[in-house]
Image: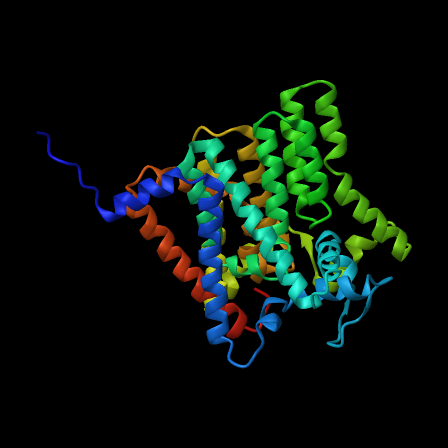
Length: 377
């Protein structure tokens, strides 16, 4: 008579999770981490309403656009500067307005849209990770993205979740050889945020290397349609061909300076003002730069390498937003692939421990950014 096989409780749980579709596990993991962040904000926020916290900073701009529409040019911001909400891309406000049609308050509509986009992004990241390295890689990619230091914005009225969902769909289409679909997702991403120029460059690179004849050229032409359409709209509305760039420079001093501001922040500002946000920006920037280098030293598809390169270079090389660089790197999800592939080869208890520590840090840091810091996360 053979002895019976008895599984430990953790092994039983692993077997049960293994039977679930990957998108359910990824969605559940993202929900668990980000729900913990929301609960922590409710506890730490005191008398400040949750809607006020989750629609602060850039969220205020997007909600205002959804309710009142766009400006016709620059205006006094009340603090001695000039700004315009035309600096903010239209897709998120359009979605917020659509949800408002069901009777939701604008703030809640914005939070619902942002949360739904973050959830969809996590699912698509899991599919992307599975395509690259199997089921574990997919789950870890979604979980790692949910547990990054600035992941609090994935449940705020920000565009990170929306953009990552569209960008992940585009990169996944590229990996599957569907150039036209990739270009369509890229065009939509161009209406979500100007960072889509990095995705456009990725689609161009893959399409030109693939040489799929007419499909390659359709992808090359179609990928920038969204972002270019928005620039043209702003130009027509303001009455100047370079209006969008002028608004970015005048309102936020945004420009591409090839990393000079990033170097200044790390080498000059951080040693003289050693605050946690400055240190976190330096750590996250260095980590993503290192992961980008590693991605060129391991076997990865051209689409993954290209998107990693262009998004990391864009985030580090842009000026005017040093404190937001770590948040801007949330869209560089493919940079996490080398770390995810390594972690997927470790024992499951190590994987759980790493994600748990990251999630706890992300939740705590998110609370600090929204309740103890005075700048946009």
